[in-house]
Length: 257
Image (tube, rainbow, N blue to C red):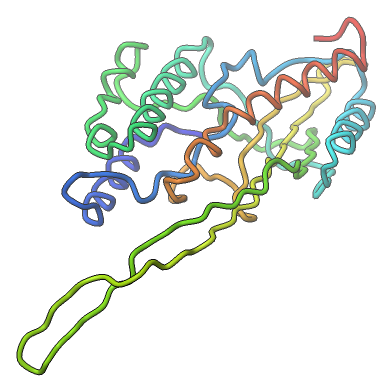
């Protein structure tokens, strides 16, 4: 889960290049970023001085205060464990994401496709792509999944209408008038809180928020979204939500975390 997938990025780049014009701008971008593209393990993994059931109740209260909808609250067959003893992989992933965001802001597919991702990985001590967490089977964890409302967006696009004129001998291609199109997007955030009891009245949590676009949740590989939405789906807002949830826990259970 949440691997850097360098090879996948390069494959995506090749596909993008086929559909791009000569100036190499974006039409779509990978829809993969979540809160953990901005955080280290210590940011999204923490403990609370409360029982497992009490922790689930607090998490449910947070969702309701954010006017969200709980879609799942039950046993989890898997639990996210750290793959590295330090934050080096997290720091590499964060740096790569930040460099990719710059290319979206500049609308430069050329810069995106030539980013030295392996150079960044090597700087942080890795000879290949890395992952910060791995999902392992478990029989003692709980999971709450919820949808939190964010932004209802609407953008007006104006495009020239294409026309073809012919007299039976000559053909002329041109434009006539403008076609106005309104594009809407309902941006939400999916909250996944994994919890397991590590001691009496002490619970560990792993909290991940992911952007959701018109009902589609960001995925590590294979998802894409229109470039015009890029600054709404970077995972930055989701990282802020993780911290907001963490502070809510602190207020709910003093002396925790």
